[in-house]
Length: 340
Image: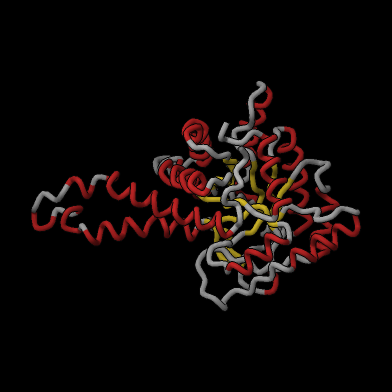
């Protein structure tokens, strides 16, 4: 069953942690970008994570009513069908959800999975993210406690972001400054509130200078070695080695050295959106520029149906994005690690 069961998803994360590799988590906004993600994972012989942000879900819900839950459920149901044709395991995840969108996104999706589990089925999504980075840490963790209990009951893993990631993601903006670094005290407070697995498994998006979006070298100072301090600081108190499963946000544009350090310190998931968006769009732009007189009815001509047929440029876009995902798998050391 290519859509990972709760047991398989836990195995995926355990294997990544033990093997010091991570899964690319690819944001998708359409059935076509979903296929590109699945294709990229399959060609790399890597399991992986497909995720849908609030903005992506709104887009998937259609511009007539822009319903996030409809969009997320529809794509997840579609994924459960088409993923059967790909020889890899994939987990479905919802990306950044701030406090003002919980009632319109994560909480209804948790309810959908709760109903499925009550019927003896697997949850629709394998993990959900709560982004409380705009709240005080106390308020953030209070909401996280509630969501973790609900997620655990539905056999779902929760992802929590405890401190800000810079840049902008679906309307949530944080400045690029010294606040983008999680402290050991932040991590200790997280462990005290959420436990270390006994209350439900969670992924931790800690900040080490991460920034969403596009940035030039030198504008952002990443300190992935900080993750080791968090692991050791909390591990020493609780007598547990490497207690956290970390998530690397703002992964687009990171250097190979930064990624390698993050993997050594417990990162099991790295989000990719900006780079894959460009990899999808670049072949389309190339096609349009090369065939402008075919895709446009220039000077009253009839154009060329073969060039403006969405399948002609859509296939190129899928291939371009899939290629970038295979590169991500190589960078994250997940190539060839799929569960047989």
